[in-house]
Image 1 (cartoon, rainbow, N blue to C red):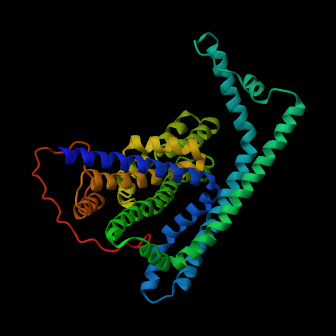
Image 2: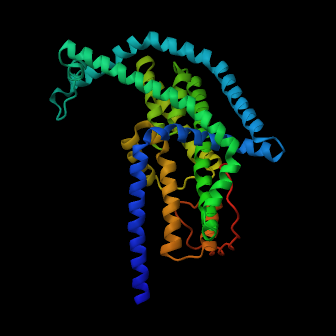
Image 3: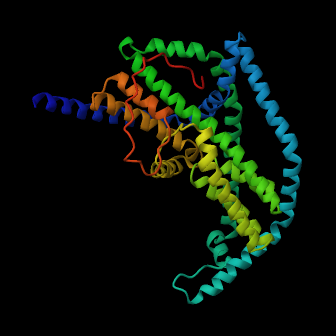
Length: 397
């Protein structure tokens, strides 16, 4: 009994120390938060391009040349896609700009109709005039100062985004070139007694984060193509622009697809009819069903295994703390936290051997996905044999 009490006390104090360490790291990270966007974007580029660079390196190509070739190939593909898509997208954008006054008039008419209908309702909808007075009320000089402040803030944000887009590829290039040496340096800093555990954690984190970035971008591309094709078949105006918005918003799990459907429905209601809007909803929903049941399980390879409720909480936290950027990194950050906490719990609280933890992690990462309801009458599966731990690999290898 005394041994269990001592063990429980050690675990409790370890948790307190871990919480303090996490709080300290979070505080320091908040102080230097300006460096995180380019570093995270550079990390995403490394995860995307490193498999190709490593494959060339294994065939005798120097990493500098392999990295340069991967960059050239990537930008060549992007340039080709832009040359193919840009003329049509620019034409649709110009047409949308011409029709915006009509679309706005239709939306304002719809809002005013709802406001008039809600006069005797419990909840009264505001009219367009009431909304404009609430948003733009005040003296003209005050509105002018607000306009200048908005423009100044917008200019600063644009400069910051451009700086991120310029610095991130440069940082990623140097990281890709020096990745083997950086791995050796990291390994030399890990004590010998903790190398196996560090390699196991690094492998799992690399598999989760790298799989998320590569898979989510691929899923967004496929969804964009599917939605654009479907909207073109129903002859929705600006189908390419709507498909691009749907694909880009699909990068954010769960809520992104719903956000991407809004422009299509609005355009269908204002330029076509209710039947076209229903077709848009059906196409968006069908694309998401194809994604959920076929594309994501194949492309994502179970990289991020989080419950939908955990994903929603992660998105809520990320969006509150970091806005759009927080939404983009919320899910992989939650996956990293889950892997670390799960590993610490199984290793130090349940006191499981590291080989058993490694075998369970490998089975969870590579095993078949269970259904909603387990077949309780099925034969029990044998426990997987523990596999010897090997050195961790670089991201994407």
